[in-house]
Image (cartoon, rainbow, N blue to C red; front, side, top):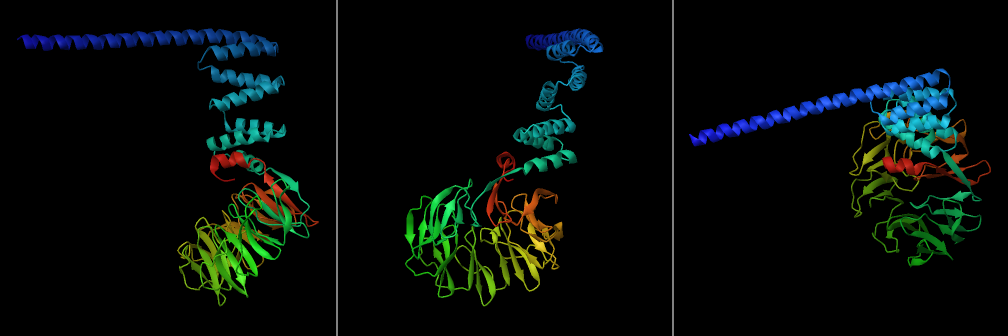
Length: 453
């Protein structure tokens, strides 16, 4: 009996606790409702007083009261207050306050696509394109289907600056922008700002691959670092070094190509008509006019079945697991195992860089396909080079420029030649034959967000 009374007592205690909680919740709801009603009432009074100032076009006084109503209270009126303030700022020519309001609305996640567009355009017009592209990127992420935002974003994305040089021959750069350059007598290396990095003293100079490059000095091939110090000397009597990739080079002796380490040690006794090294360690080799693919251990992946291998601006064939090759039917893409990516064939193609592949229809016109062989940009250009990142160099009306993935010319076609972009830098040639370096002004902003420009 005592146990039963205890259970009844506990039940009554639990019920009492529940009732107290419900009662407290009711009081809190009532109190919150009273507070909201009071806030709404007090804010409405402020709005009415501001409306009177506005009727007399006393903009400053009206603005101050509206701002007070906006900052002191959070009610259903706030959205309308912001719209009223925007109208006042526009009508009164208070542009700094207007754009500050747009920025606040964007920051709070209340802005529409038109507001992102308007604020970005303001910064573009005022010369502060770095701010513009940040708002455009935000706007495109919130409103990915807005065509006006996308178009303006693409336009701002590819703003470039140009550094002119006095050189007519400039080679492919390393990842940190050491460019081999020829001054008319000797080769040396320049930086992205056009300044000399290593003196012009070499008979030949290949691009830096990682920390090292191969140069020819006093008739002998040597491996140098970025200070110009020697790290290895050729003792094989090579007639030519045609490429360097990672820790390997292609050396030519008595008309035959061999694969060597970058310290000039022979890696294979095999001799070839030509060799194309790849950054993944694989290599394409040619014998009797046909190419085969070797793996990183220089063992055959395929037979000698390819009629051509398309090299990119680095002198390599593979990028991102794909390479452009040809057979008797035409050009196509293969994977690292040598298997084709699709059945279609193209009359001609350029080496893959890091995006869409430049392909030709056989009638002298060029377009772009993706890794599935689908034509993404129609055949309409006089020439083209494969996309690097989001840009493709094309020749149109006799001049070279750059298109984006929407087939819009975003860097004007005004150059005699143009190379694919390497990161933020591309080489272009003017009518006098001199090379300039184009730099994407906002590359770092887009790179930080997407991993590539």
